[in-house]
Every structure is written in structure tokens, then in C-alpha cells.
Amino acid sequence: MDESEDVPKDFIKLKSEKLSVDEVSELVISPCCGAVSLFIGEFNISELDLWVCCCSSSLPSVVPITEASVIIAVSSPHRAESLEAVMYCINTLKASVPIWKKEIYEDEYSWKENKECFWANSEK
Image (tube, rainbow, N blue to C red; front, side, top):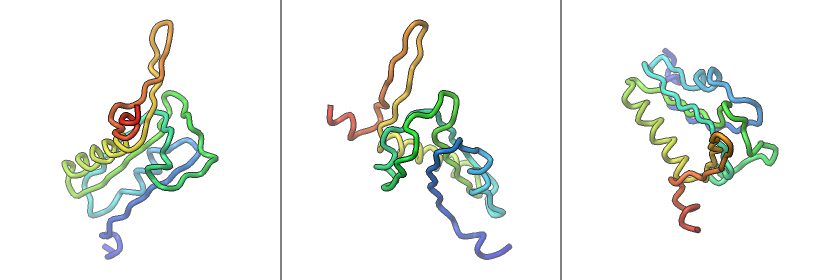
């Protein structure tokens, strides 16, 4: 095994094209890791640029329902660590960024902001 394969790598990638679970999974697969955990989320991220500090204005603010708007992937030697890391990442994202979901009922719909975003809810 090449020594460079042991070095952890972090990726944050913003793109306007449809997200690919396979592409994201490939980024974290490593011969020294036995587990890969994924979170695939469907929601409208209105202020993601605040979380990652830079964002292209060409990115869409609404992702079609059923299409992933975020994929979080973590690999680790054991599954418990990768599952825990994925949970930490999505909870941190939801606490840092106002995320809107469109809830559809029989004859109507409504947009709801996530209650986890501490700073967005404190301004109301």
C-alpha cells in the first residue's frame, strides 16, 4: 500500500449538475477503511454558501423533489465511526444552514424551515 493512501482527505464540492452517489462514494473509498457510510438528503439549501464560505451564484437554490441536494460520505476502518461521523456532519449542516422542505398534503403544500438551524430561528 502506498503511504499516501493512509492520509485522510476532506472534500467539499458544490455543483449545479445532479449529484452522483457513485462519484461521492469513490472519493472516500480507501484500502485501509472497511466501512463507507452515506447520507443522501433531499432538501432546498437556501444559504449553503454561509456554511462552506464560498459558493457560485450559478448554483440552483431549489433541487427537484426526489433528487439529492446533499450527499455526505465518510469512510473509516470500522462502521461505528463512519456512521457517527455522517450523523455529526448532517447535524452540523442542519444546525448551521437554514434548510427548507416542501411538505405536500392532499390539497395543499407548505414550506418549512428546519428547526435545528440555531441562528435562523433566533432572529425570529
